[in-house]
Image (tube, rainbow, N blue to C red; front, side, top):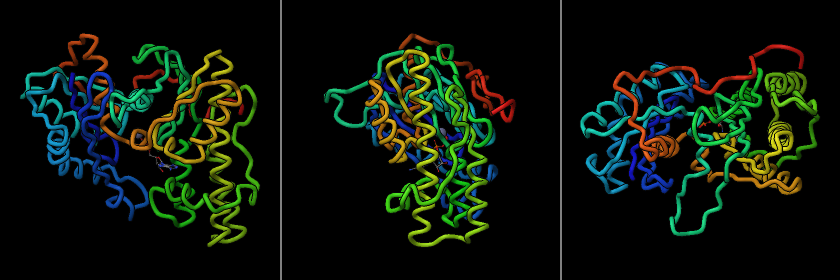
Length: 353
Ligand code: KG4
Ligand code: ZN
């Protein structure tokens, strides 16, 4: 089975061809980062227009790199939620057109479920032995727009339960806001990751947000404020001080994320943990999750970096699972929606911390 996936929920225009068992035949990502960089964040109207410009070439490149034509496809999958509606609409309309022209079923995919299942993508030689998680597992989804823990019983929306999420900013949003504050440009996450390598994570004391033992919720806006107050007091750091601040901030975020992931798995008696989303590309988070899980006797599964940041391979694979189960697909009335299909347990900004 071969499925074409299309992704346009935020600032990446992406298309990929993936088989029913997760083998990535092509994966094309056009990033709009340079377009939004001067504005310090994603400008929705600019994003939509750029998706329009790039959707055609990106889809053509994905088909040609996989050496397939529309006729070779079994289905078309597209991100239809959550995200910027104007951006999602471009991908949804392109996918509808292609599925209709090829006379193939169309599957609308929730972007968050795509991230959660990205661990199943195989980018190397498909005959190599693969270490994949069995169900159930606990997933930590950390991206620019979302930060949450899920119990994943099976790869479908009705079998994924949110255990706790952020009360305010997402982890990636915190990286990006701190990056902006330090003049590192947009997005801040990868730059902070790089600078933190040569910094001392103990140099600057920052307190962990929502560190209570039994809470599976997160909060990152207070941590961003702590960094802002430090900068207001000490001035914008440079050189070693900048590296030290990045290392201290990153250590605080990744320590909180890793310890809550392990706590959730232990609380629910599930021996497997998985990470996904753009912040899962972070070197320190990957190491901490792997080390902490091993120390607690849990199995940790960390996707390849290319599978963490936004891509269409995870969307194609999620659609392929439904197609493989004999799903008829969604109707031509499939709509773009800003909210995720996954029910939320955490309410933003509510209750005692
Ligand atoms: O999953 P993603 O590509 O898009 C969303 O669905 O949001 O995540 C983007 C986020 C950005 O906030 C970016 O700064 C962050 O992931 N990110 C990182 C790293 N690479 C990307 N954060 C920390 N360390 C990284 N290496
Ligand atoms: Zn994403």
